[in-house]
Amino acid sequence: MRMLTKWVLTGVLLYLFSYLGWFISIETIQGALILSFAVALLHTLIKILAGLLVGAGCFTMGISIIPGIILSVLSLPLALWKGQEFIKGVFIPSFVDAILLAIVLNVALELVQRMFGNQK
Picture 1 (cartoon, rainbow, N blue to C red):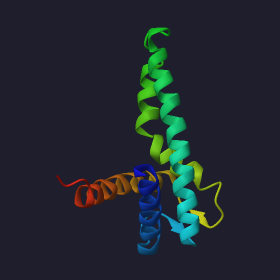
Picture 2: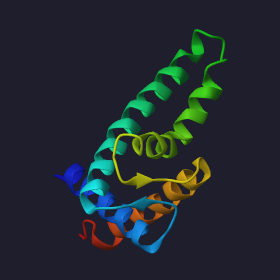
Picture 3: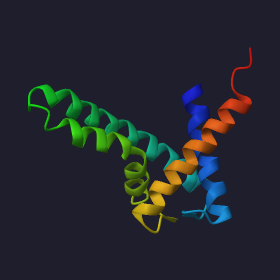
Picture 4: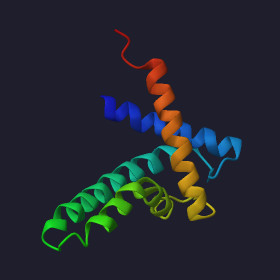
């Protein structure tokens, strides 16, 4: 349930950022929700690949650790950048905008989770 909630919240935030004109252009809320799902899937696959690279560092005498860490840090911007290719009506102007969008999206998700998260 948390994963579905986070997926929908991410889609709504992406659509809000598009409405405000921040780093992304999305035509419909359906496009934002589909982009959110595609980004979640791509982000997961990239994080798995990055983990494999870091894990393979012991076999490559540490050579693959640095690319694995870089790939891990850039996994969300890469997922946003590549995710736009799958959905019609979604446009991110540059990879720098994807990086900035990923930062703003992470901060916004964290704020919303802290405001409406489990309050014990």
